[in-house]
Image (cartoon, rainbow, N blue to C red):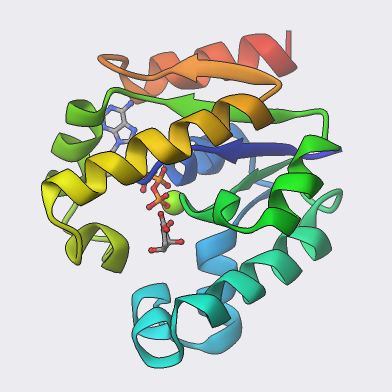
Length: 163
Ligand SMILES: Nc1ncnc2c1ncn2[C@@H]1O[C@H](COP(=O)(O)OP(=O)(O)OP(=O)(O)O)[C@@H](O)[C@H]1O
Ligand SMILES: O=C(O)C1=C[C@@H](O)[C@@H](O)[C@H](O)C1
Ligand SMILES: [Mg+2]
């Protein structure tokens, strides 16, 4: 079994997965290593549809092989992935208020996110609300990370799965 973390950009999926288990895989990192370029570069060069296809193949091939998987925020843009995630039993939605996510994303100088960088605030907010409904439907567990430290979120996840 694999725990699969879903949620909007900045929810902390990659951060939490790395801390939860050595046997983690981050989909963005996996794709980046496989194609020897940053995800942002891949999207800019090959387009978002191509990236979504790669995400679909990667998710399917990695589930079951790692204790925890952190997905990219847009994993649920694919209907195929939505169906796939609906059939999985350990999908955890890391959620947070829009303003909280915005603050985290603005502070994060390490990761580049074309979807975040290329949208104005209103567009990003619309995307957030559109996606939030889908994350909720697909989730088996939901952790609200708003105003929670990384360590607190990690402790809640461990309570669910390691207690
Ligand atoms: N609970 C938290 N409190 C404060 N900052 C956080 C928290 N979780 C993550 N962060 C910070 O927010 C930024 C984004 O985190 P992270 O890259 O883990 O998000 P993500 O969900 O993987 O996003 P993406 O969908 O783009 O991959 C990082 O700088 C991280 O340190
Ligand atoms: O929310 C999104 O659509 C994305 C989130 C990131 O994790 C990356 O997967 C990429 O930048 C796209
Ligand atoms: Mg991530």
